Length: 254
Image (tube, rainbow, N blue to C red):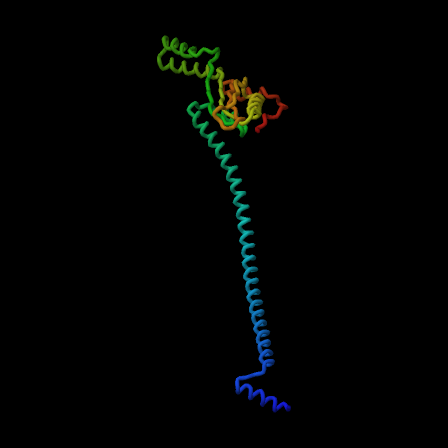
């Protein structure tokens, strides 16, 4: 059969809406291959798009993680610095409150400086007692002399003479200082007492008592009391300098 006859036969089959079985099977296979190829291509495109989206999301998350990690590190450091500054501020406020409470006693500023300059950070002074000791321990000597002077002199002159004698007695008098405080551990207390003793600015330094604090939550916190004696006169500072050997360095400040 010639090619023309074959085409005419196929055309007659088409007109009658009838094709041979093999031809239909081939056409179904071709359609199936095309459909599979189209589905695969569409799936590949979807996978590529999803991969790109996931990659961009991953890159964004990595950037956000790095930024948050840097912020967390800076905030952690800032929190540590804030805690350290808060502790220093609390210690300064305790010292300021202590100075305010004893301000009415008006001790000389040089005495406060000598006491506070060598105070370790582990110690908190809670109270100070400032008491002048007249020469010979006679509190009424100056008052008695003032009354005797007033009997034979004019009142104004007697008052001036009594004031002058009182100033002289105070210059020759001594000062008794009692310190009360608390500290974490015994080492800081003994170090404070030793430094005060070696400073040469006090005639006597004595550790009166050390007891474990019952009110504190820390078992290693101790309350203590220290007694000091020094000259009350204006030359006390000069005498303290003379007491210290010339070749010895000043007492260290912890």
